Image 1 (tube, rainbow, N blue to C red):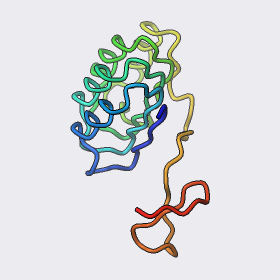
Image 2: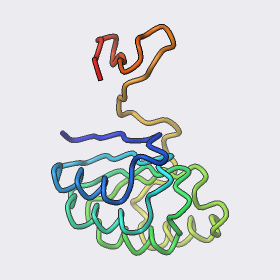
Image 3: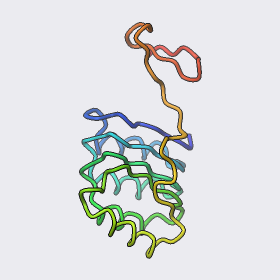
Image 4: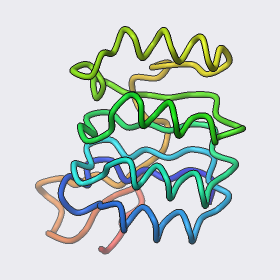
Length: 141
């Protein structure tokens, strides 16, 4: 698996979840952890340790991640090309973060994509609970 989207995990996706996933998926190139409120800088450590090929990280509304944590993590990621953060770092000096990111990593694009290109199942009220569709294929949870 090259791309993984666990966005929307709110209180269910934690740093431990990220550790388990990244240990199992070392060839990830794109990861979306947006709206996972239990994630902090420890998750970035797991990503750096286990996913050295990561090119893109999306972490919108992950409020426990501070800009200094993300910059420190980015130094370890040799293949990083894109960061998507709407508006996680707004309260934590976002303008300064953008400037530092562009200075330290001119090749890394920030907020280039406003939507994830990684498919994830979506639910519908008419579908039985515990079931979902992905690309119009019925999936039983």
